[in-house]
Image (tube, rainbow, N blue to C red):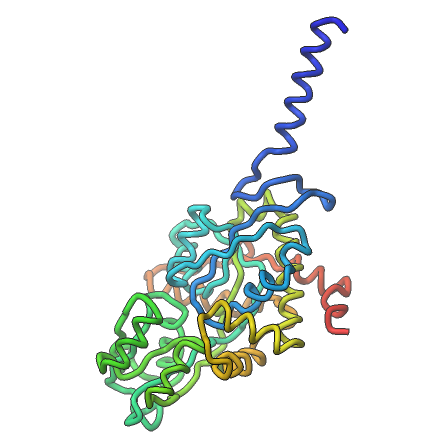
Length: 338
């Protein structure tokens, strides 16, 4: 073969290899087609609690691999930091409270909501036995992880529902849920707000459950990606949503597997605590994780009010649960519950 033909073939082969092996935007790799190999994806989550049992089960039961994802779960210290992790590309997918993400979106951060697993605040308030009712919490110190976290937003929802001013309680931000537990034991705070089983374990030290926040609707556990990642990696997003929806079906139908994953990933040795957590969350996990646009609007309205600006009139650029709705329409979700 003439040398020029050899060079042409070599160059073409190099270009083909480069095209097939190129790294997609946001960290996923491989071809986008249905026959492609595993796609890499880093998924952030922000608390060592049962709220993210869908992710735990997906990892433990090999569901991510089933749908062609090479998934890496990455712990983020607080839901208030989820947005920056997405924006920086250190994670490609993450659940979090919509209000915190909306706050960043109003400042120009690229964000898109794609599914909603929990449409209420999923927190409990545990505190001193002297606090007999929620009314007794007035003027007391409440331990929280970070400003803008899901727990912080749930306390704001409680205050609004009670018709109390923002200063009716004293918020004490301690950086982590474990620090909240320590502060409660030492008497530095009167109560804490966390998801089960973290706060629940304080019952072993004589503390009592004051209330839970599940009566307050919110896009409290909404999955988000950047619009840029979504547009260039829709196959990866579709694979994730298929996996996550199947894992939601496991949460609803297999308590034993779910409890085992909660124990493993939450660091809870007491099986009874893990079972308590399961019983708390099972009624609030959605089977079909479509998004109520009203909850996203509420999140943006609250975020805009805090920033003293106007909320966007059109939220369509921030919301696209069409993949979930498509999976619902074609019977994918119903088949998981047969």
